[in-house]
Amino acid sequence: MELDELKDLWQQNTQHPPGAELRLSELLARKSNSPLSTIKRNLNWELGAIIILYGTSILFYFIAWNGKLESVGWFMLFIALLFFVYYYMKIRLLDKMANPAGRVKQTLQHQITTLESFVRMYFIAGTVLIPVSILFFARLYYVHSRYITPGNILFPSDENPLWKVLLAWTFLIAVITYLSLMMNKWYINKLYSRHINKLKSILKEMEEE
Image 1 (cartoon, rainbow, N blue to C red):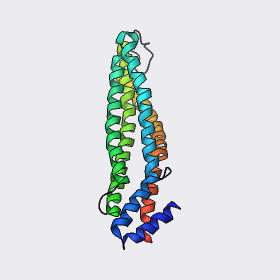
Image 2 (image 1 turned 180 degrees about the horizontal axis):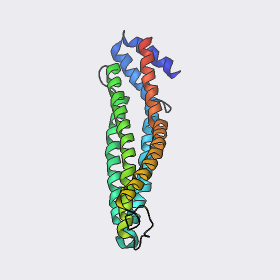
Image 3 (image 1 turned 90 degrees about the horizontal axis):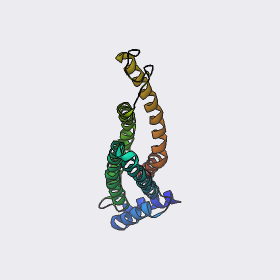
Image 4 (image 1 turned 30 degrees about the vertical axis):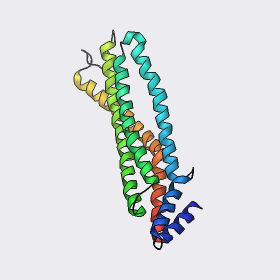
């Protein structure tokens, strides 16, 4: 039903541009199950999860063990701040998409491309964060650990030369990063990519009418 309404408005757009464009933009944004509404709802859900989970974790690491692991708190705070910047930029774009100015078709096409760039950046950042986090916590463990067994292949010792340690870390990081990449890809598709594709399909089908 929503797609049929959009097609009708798109056809009217050639005869009555101002009114049709306004109604088209309203229809794209007004329904609770529309792609824009779903993307915005998922983004707000992520924001709430970050505030609750990261907020409590950051506070914990700053207070627990007399602040000996406050570096973890700073690390998580940095990640949270990056997400807040991402959230602000993306929510502004979604608001603009809900109320496009000027020529609706060209505006939405450009904004969908920008939205895809944001999602791609989010995917890349989430993937890169995995090996960075592994190395960060590995160093933290190495610095604060009172004793590391000589047979631990993840740290250099007389039994484990540097080349063997580097090989072990490369394998471990590669496996975990690959598994996280697959999970991240599924997660982003569920929350964002499939809804962006629906928006693109709506615009494409309306153009073909």
